[in-house]
Length: 109
Image 1: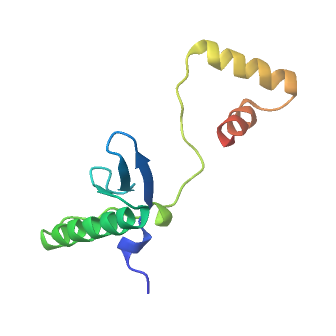
Image 2: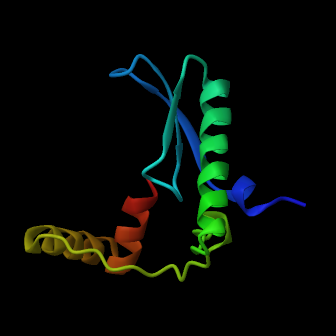
């Protein structure tokens, strides 16, 4: 069985500033781990998250829910400048589709 910590969203990327790979966890944005290889960075961030989660549990703090386990409605509000709104509405009208369809297509790119 997969535990909650293994369900978290991990990412490894190169850091030009540190000249090392950096391991990150989306559910714990304040944590990171630097290493000379990508596999070491991944293992490092997983270990740090596990230790943090253990401490949180010990202190009866609620662990973040894994992004993969969250339910998403498919709706969110985005504020844009009026000129952008006008441009998108015009593009939608000229294309014969809804403003929602135009915005969704642009976001999906």
